[in-house]
Length: 320
Image (cartoon, rainbow, N blue to C red; front, top):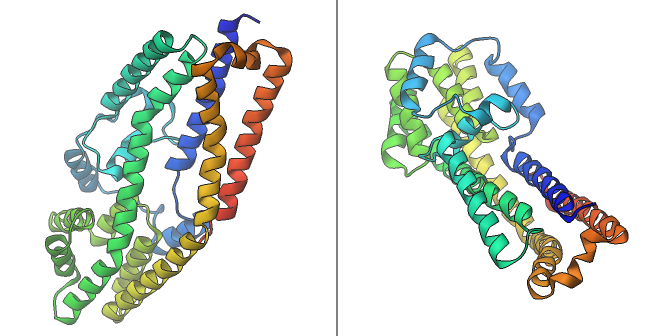
């Protein structure tokens, strides 16, 4: 096979691997069964969004929804929703354009400094850079929101005990707590002031922030408004449970730190050695895609790396 065709095949394999990793990073981190049960409790799915809610969302979210990526993969990779969850002030078309420019620059630099065989891999890596940044930004924002949620629950509970309404308690959270939780509660408070039912605004916040603890809060509010009860005590218990779960999660992270570091080293070492050999002695490493045995070894190495990374992730990923 010509070397250019082999390089293109390697680039396509790398592209598939990158997009598979992006799908794993950007998928909903919460458990599907628990989410489905909570949606059934609050009646989500059986009730459509009101026209006022749709108009408000269109006015608040200034993004272009009709982009190529959302049209091709609206369910697998909803870029507009990911940008909203990450609170990134960028349009999907701009992010896609940045990725194309980065891919072009990476291709030119690899052709100039290394050789043509590395160009497709460099293009894929540079193109996925902005999307990886968006994924990390989304993950960091959701983690920060989850860490602030127990304090918000206790603050709302204190406001309820002081005689305030639930909406007023959310307004206190919006005024007193830092970002990102203050922004989300402020949006809920403003939407219900405009006449949207409180349950719908809370469900909208759950769509913007996929957090299971937040869904427990929304479910407790929906049940309390239908059946009655002491909502302040319920919120205190939810906050206490979240804090205790975070303590256990910290212990789990400490116990699995060695496994996570081992996984990073084992995955990064072959890639680093490959790039180093491409830079120092490309004639020696070229046998991996010019010789039949080298091609088989390369495919086997990539498959074994993927299997090993999945196995390590299964070992260290402990649900709490």
